[in-house]
Amino acid sequence: MNFNELAKSRFSCRKFDNKSVEQEKIDIILDTALNAPTAVNKQPQRILVLTDKNKLERLNACTKYGFNAPLCFAVCYDKSKAYNRGYDGKNSAEIDASIVTTHMMLQTQDLGLGTTWVMAFNPTAARQCFDIPDELEILALLPTGYPAKDVEISPLHSKHIDLEEMVSYNEF
Image 1 (cartoon, one colour):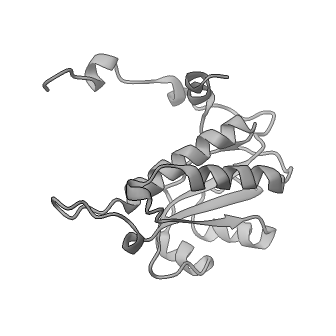
Image 2 (image 1 turned 180 degrees about the horizontal axis):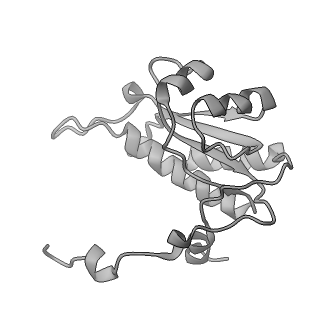
Image 3 (image 1 turned 180 degrees about the vertical axis):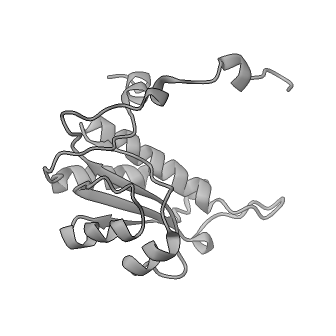
């Protein structure tokens, strides 16, 4: 499958099979995260991998969007480990972690798994449930697993703004 086909086939999976994700596939996803580009290669991302059923049940205290997935990645970042732009001091940590998360999502799709980027979570509860260190900010939760046979793709998945609304050449 070429990249454009992969990107188009990825969707927010909200229903998973009970099957556990093999460690080999988890390792491939994490290797992809490690190799994702970050500003000045600072790599401020820190990822908590949740596979234990008891830990996964704690997701319910943080979000209603855990979807009973057998695996969840909590993608975090450490601002002190990231690049700061010299012109205005803008910190790249959140951008870097977003790039990493996107790479993880696409790798997940390529492996025949599904995931969705969950931003709707209580960060205070997540920090407490999973003992997230104070220096880390939680960017996203990625419930991950094999899509259920009856998973439905949101009708919004294929709706896009017009290209002309998104793109301007040489001036706005």
